[in-house]
Image 1: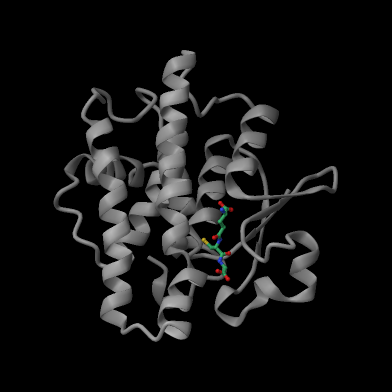
Image 2 (image 1 turned 180 degrees about the vertical axis):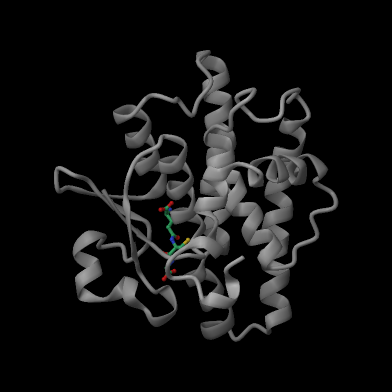
Length: 216
Ligand SMILES: N[C@@H](CCC(=O)N[C@@H](CS)C(=O)NCC(=O)O)C(=O)O
C-alpha cells in the first residue's frame, strides 16, 4: 500500500497510527502541502479534493478521506480491532472520533487558517485564538468522556480508534501552543500513547519528509 502523506498532516497521522497498530506494511509518498503539491495535476488524480491522506491499495484503487480509509482498514484487516466489541460502546467510541474528525479538525485545517490570514487578513494572534478556541471547545467533551476510563487506553490495555484520532489532534494543539492544562486526562492518555513504538514511528518528527531539525 502507498500512503500519500505530509508529515504534519493530522489526518494522515491518523492513518499512519492505524497502519502501525494493524501491522500493515506500506510506503509513504510525501505530498508537500506548503508548496501546493496537493493541488497539482498528478496528485488530483489520486484525490480530486486535493487533500491528504489518500491510500493506494495493493489492488490499485485509491481511497480518500481518513475516516473512510480507517473504516476500510478496520473491515479489511479486523485483527486487532480498533473498536470495543459491545455495539453501544462501539457507537460511543465512534462518536468521540467523529467529534474530532467532524467538529474540531475541519475548523482548523490549513486551508481554513490560510483563508483567515490571507483572504480575511486576520493577524496571527487572531488566527491562533481561533485555533485554540476550537480545540478548547472540542476537548471539553472528550475530557469529560475520559472520566469514565479506568484503564490506560480506550480499549483497556490497547489503544483504539479514539487514540488514532485524538493523538494527532493533541500534537496540533502542542504545535500551536494551546494551553492543555484544563485537560489532564487527555494529556495523560497522550503520554501513555507516546511510550508505544507504533505511535513513535507514526509521529510527524519521524517522517521522511520532516525537516531534519524536527526529527528527535
Ligand atoms: N476530512 C479530511 C480532511 C483532510 C485534510 O484536511 N487534510 C489536510 C491536512 S490535515 C490537507 O490536506 N490540507 C491541504 C490544504 O488545506 O490545502 C480527512 O479526514 O481526510
